[in-house]
Amino acid sequence: MRKLIYALPVLLFAGLAGYFILALQPGYDPHALPSVMIDKPAPDFKLAGLKDDGFSLEGFKGRPVVINFFASWCVPCREEHPLLMRLAEKEHIPLYGIDYKDRPEDAARLLAQFGNPYRSVGLDQDGRTGLDFGVYGVPETYVLDATGRIRKKFTGPMTAKQVNQELLPILKQLSGGV
Image 1 (tube, rainbow, N blue to C red):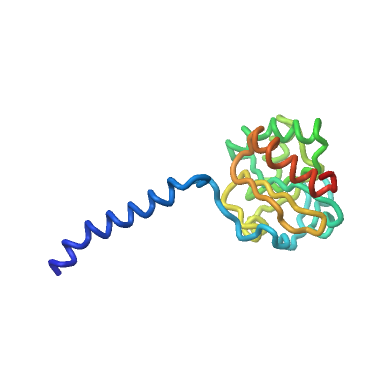
Image 2 (spheres, rainbow, N blue to C red; image 1 turned 30 degrees about the vertical axis):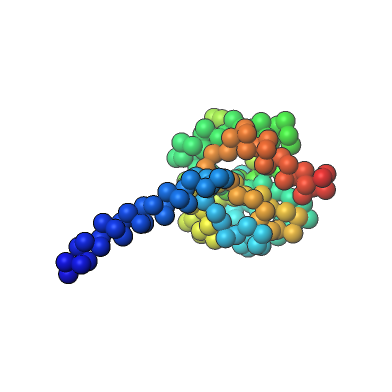
């Protein structure tokens, strides 16, 4: 038992040293949350719509699309919203929203107040579709290629830098404009 007590500080030090060695590697991003869904088919879904018939994965096939999970109660979603409006209006991005674990009337109020950047909004009130996609929390944005495979995931509110350096180039590539 005494040997274990003496070994405990050494083991803790070794664990911390290993963590710091990993964290100090070039290119390590502590904010990156890897997704096992990248380059895999998006989960099949069919959602009721906020103002229309909604949408399904099958309806997206044949063209690349961007799916943004959001909610009216999400403060970072409100921070990201002006950027999404710019993408929809100026860049004409095929942007679809999924209202995650939210009341439809609250989502409608948010979009009426701040503008609606989405071509259509699906309702994921029970969170099942978000769970299938691997959503950690909102906002999260997924880029799907023309075959319905997830090609990119953005966790948290997107920034202008991410849009210019990552989102727009991948959409250009997926659209055949390499």
